[in-house]
Length: 141
Image (cartoon, rainbow, N blue to C red; front, side, top):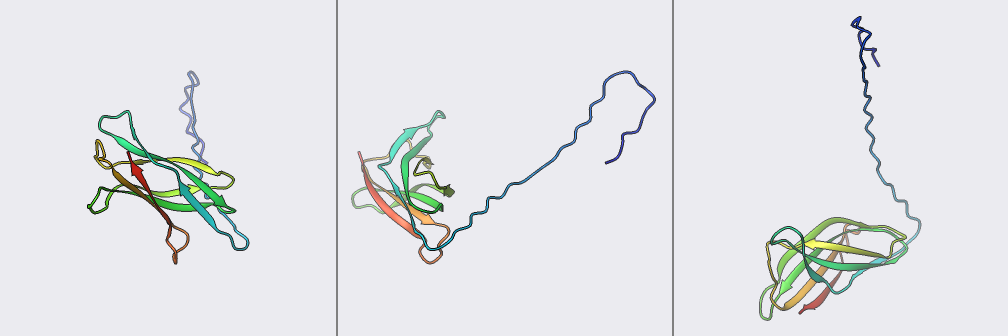
């Protein structure tokens, strides 16, 4: 580190700032075989503070010995129509020892959803051979 040059002026106050950056990377080590499952509860459409902004709130329950890294997608269908993706969250983590987690999935420009079925799909980002952890359907009232 270099010393600042002296100007000969000894009056006044001087300030010197040293900035130190650091990065933390979590490392998870697992021993043995183990399964983890994540199950959502009935989702509820919630209005956020911003105008015309809604989310789908659901409570996730984790069972198993290990943490999980996953994506969650929300689809909406009405009778006789094709499923439409209405929201998605990517790169979520669910660490042990937590058993419950509440997530809010932002909805894509939908002010209100008609009655129908909400389907939530959870995709495991750790297991390439079985990417979908599960799919659950809920009636929207």
